[in-house]
Image (cartoon, rainbow, N blue to C red; front, side, top):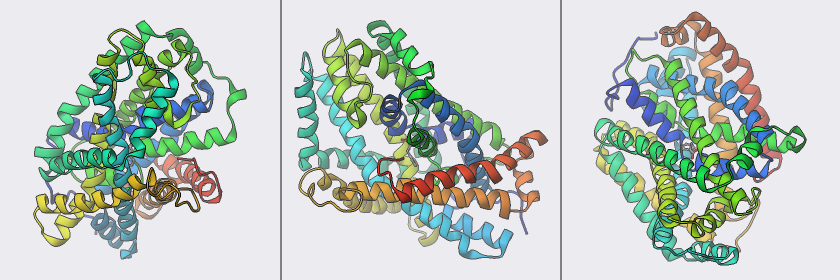
Length: 458
Ligand code: PHE
């Protein structure tokens, strides 16, 4: 029988704000600052942005509400939560597999996420020391390839980044996660706003605004729409237990719907701000908005290298990137850490160190995919491409879909309305409609297209 309000085994957030900061910390990451600008550029700007916004609010938001709800109702790590709720609501312990696959995906994602986050650390140093002052495009591109070609550099930064992540997670919910996001999230927003001001005054703001906010539907391809949908999902950290794990520490009296709306708004705001930093510079310096994944690392240093105080603002930009990646990385490590401490009673510190070491080792596969093992290619490309494809494009949608179906179809209406009862009845009705029909349809589309083809989706 559903029991109201279990006790969390790991402690609680001290407030609703702490929860909003933590979940938006997990949501705001490389996806917003690195990936979103380049896909928005690649798929033509305005029309793509509109589709993206629609996906975020109609599909991402109800899924987020579902995951937070499950997490808070179970009050355990995602695997134990799904097992418990599965038994309570459906008499089956198989639902724990949903949690298990989610936790596993988070773990694998962290292994390559940390490597890319490491690039931003290297770029903090490079931009600050004036490496790019007056550089030509070819030099900047070559310098990026130098970095990815050196497994020593990559390993060094991967190690630094993982060590910081482990140190934060080891300190627990309030002492580690909460303290970190309370400092890092406001810092990130502040730096980002300063950068937007800088880009607007040095760059071509009108051209950027026209590109981003004047929808031209002739430039939107069906594939672009799919990418928007897949990204809506990734950027909100859905489908891998992070949101569920954080939901487990949410105080019982906090409204799930309004906290989720706040998170989605913050995530969207950061993605928009990121484009407002990147595109004025891109247009001012005649760079290509459709440059692809290299946009942030290969074109922005060029812009920073040609402007006054560029070294300072460039370094700022990469600090923002690294900070955002860090708050996401702690969200990726937390579910597995909670699971390990709850199942083995290992102290949190050891659980975090142990899991962090395994992630570190796994990360070497990604590192070598850029150099020594670059020629080992199969299916989607290098080892790294395969890891990314399986986790981000296949497992995340599957887990997200299952969690949403569980919350809206399998869980009895009383249980879900009990969790959402701080909100007006209409909120519950809207959530249930979106979660039952709209979100599954959207996820199914992304998922099917990912398994059938398109390696660059996500
Ligand atoms: N949401 C993060 C980002 O946008 C990525 C992420 C995905 C983090 C899944 C955790 C889980 O960068």
